[in-house]
Length: 169
Image 1 (cartoon, helix red, strand yellow):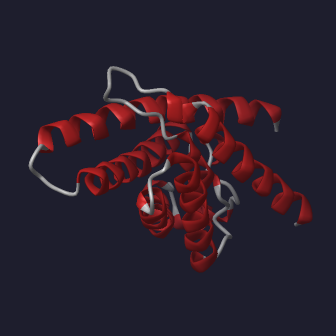
Image 2 (image 1 turned 90 degrees about the vertical axis):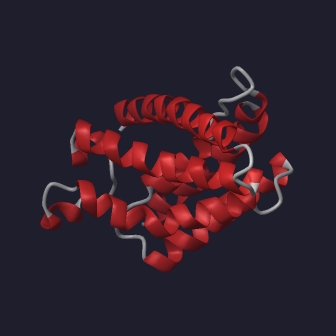
Image 3 (image 1 turned 120 degrees about the vertical axis):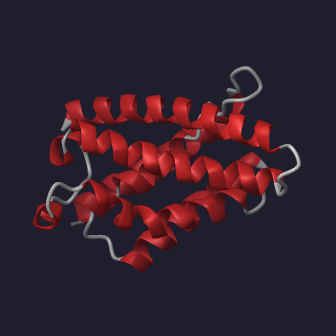
């Protein structure tokens, strides 16, 4: 138990620092921004209670907001992601009784289901984040383009991070 808490605490800190130092400064074609820190929410064990997942998600978003100068935007989008994590996960688990596996991963879900899970949560996060940023539907094409490009970029990077961390286990 203590080992798991330490592991997820380290993951939390490393992803926030990586987002603040590296990924916040990457912007491809003035449209796509990698939002890799949300992998922490996706990787939380199924056994984390709803309230704990939502609280950790809020704290993750708030931590990134501090370094990104985006007051409350990441906190709100991360809180939504934390609330939707288990319902989305239930969509992609082959059977309900299989949800005894502690961590969602390509190994526990299967590669296709894991990719759908990551893509769905990434899309929800990016749509929410860029809608909050624009706070209007005036330039909705740009908002959709930014959300779509950021979803694809974030999705690819998260899959790479998941593959790298899976090999070390």
